[in-house]
Image (cartoon, rainbow, N blue to C red; front, side, top):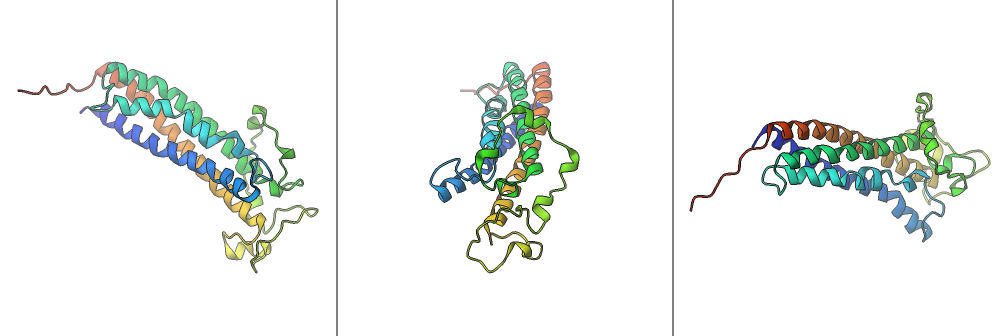
Length: 229
């Protein structure tokens, strides 16, 4: 087994793991919204899970490169120079999908959940435009919506969730679901921080496989042993 084949196998299995993790993370707020409200897109936690950064960006767009990397590894059905070249080519889409996942997730962390804006958990403030992804400003990543005791505007009050701990005890209690506000903040922060990390790792694996696949195409793969009968 050549060095390129070994790295191709590693990248393939790594991308498969990250792909599944991205889909699961993206599905968490969607499932919670369905369980709570009985239907999708009614009082969602945020707008950004509906951009499907984990399902489309870190999932579907990463699948072709993942499948080709696994097929081009040692003993794979495409273990050849052509397979190595195709694994390099398809992972360009992986890089695009991972970048999309990261951009959407960073924008989500920048703005916070819907409950932190004046319209509460209303989807009326959701604007699905790719122009929004270019409005990321470094100064907005102070995450004050998460670390402050409460991010809810004065004209909106989140209903409690049958717990004696209030939103004002956030800094003392850490992560908890004592109110709808704290639940939404915790889920939003955990999901999109996880998706940023997933997108970053997929980006690194995709870039690495582009280089490795190209080198494997130039240098070739190891010869398969012929069975002596």
